[in-house]
Length: 121
Image (cartoon, rainbow, N blue to C red):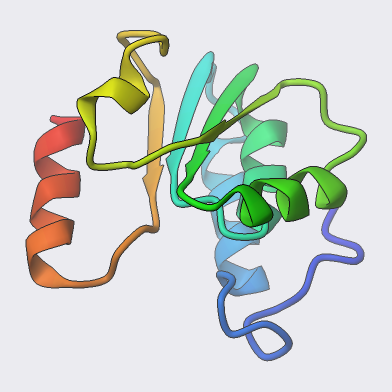
């Protein structure tokens, strides 16, 4: 499952392999229906989220990132890729109203982190 997934030491813009393993281990015995990922980047964490939840909705603001994500996850059929602004209500209109797991790795600045927290509450 973790083969061919880069570590933070290989790709500074991804989460560490340890984090991905810890994430998977924490959720592996739980029933997770819907997952929302805000900030997909290249889709490496998305890949792990797709092994945790039945349906994953992954948002990124750049079409080139979405293409990269799709290339890194060609065997995953439970991911819905969404190119949109994570800070616009319109991006969320067609999504389920309830998520069992929300993973946020978006803009790492105070005002945007607060906006992320307020959105998922």
